[in-house]
Length: 137
Image (cartoon, rainbow, N blue to C red; front, top):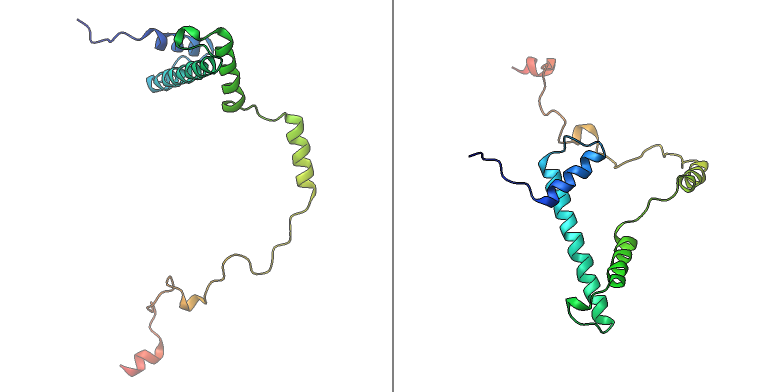
């Protein structure tokens, strides 16, 4: 007997979708994450469609219609997945922002530090003994 476990149908479909997009060497963790996302998304859409059907006066799972599911998907798509702004808009915005010069930096910027001799990183010993300390010994 081999120790190979059968792959669930949905996981196999996800791996086929990835392969169709040119991703042939995806780690198993990626397939598990996508499988979890698909299951969670499906559960949320069906739960929302059940709420919409109950609001419409149709009770139970038999009352869910295609329109309820479509509305749940459209609401999810509008709020969960947002599209990036168009490239032209971003270019215009960047040109507007970059046309203003940056403010000048003051002579002393950043946090004000104590004198080097008062810093904790200053050495508190002398590598080369001074002449006055040799004379005293």
